Length: 319
Image (cartoon, rainbow, N blue to C red; front, side, top):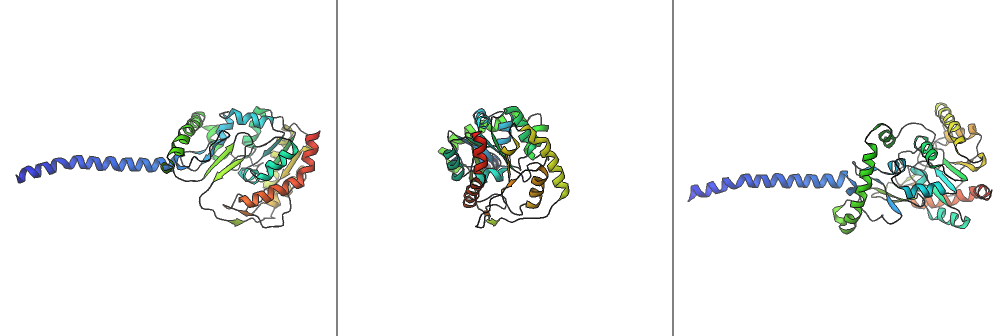
């Protein structure tokens, strides 16, 4: 009897070993799935107007650049094309103007707006080509100067411009959103709660979901880097004539951040001969991550901006 029991025990060990290996593989795959794909993010921000612009899963990350470049969100393109006022810049502009103050101002003015900024320091590299394709009808352009006229290629633009499979990559990302929404809405425990940005098709506004925030006050750097000023000014001189509006209807501004390069920004605006609309705010503004204004600060800044720029915007809209 003893030898038979030993035979049975040894015979079962390969099966146990295989089961252990399979379980380990499944756990590893599940972990990778929840950290490197769109399932790193929750799905509570979707609605008929909003899609994911960015999810912090390492294998997903940016979608909004490809969505516009490859026209994967045609409804969003149409709203941007038909907007009366277009806002251009980075995600700092997007966050600063994705506020109730912006909605209220345009509702009162009976005008349409679109926030056409992009993450990864969206600049003229992506914006110039998009505007050429869209042929927008905007009567006013508001540009966040900080880094906008820097012609360096961001990681998403390097992929789009140099990867022959870029379109396929972004089309797959679009398809994953259709899978992600029903699964994570039905079984939210299956998905992590990583940083995610939802974007409105109608206005381009951001709705973000963040984890822990690191509140940091904004600050200003008055130092002028002449090389930066010269290169940015040259890029601006090439870009601004493409905007089919009078120069007075191009409004330059700068959303404050940590170590705001206000010295460079002022110098660029002066070299272009364009006024810089930077509202004075009596309270201390703060960022939630060392770069983007937190929600209370964004509300204060956007409200002050529209108070300062209101007459110019309305004048151009009326004309």
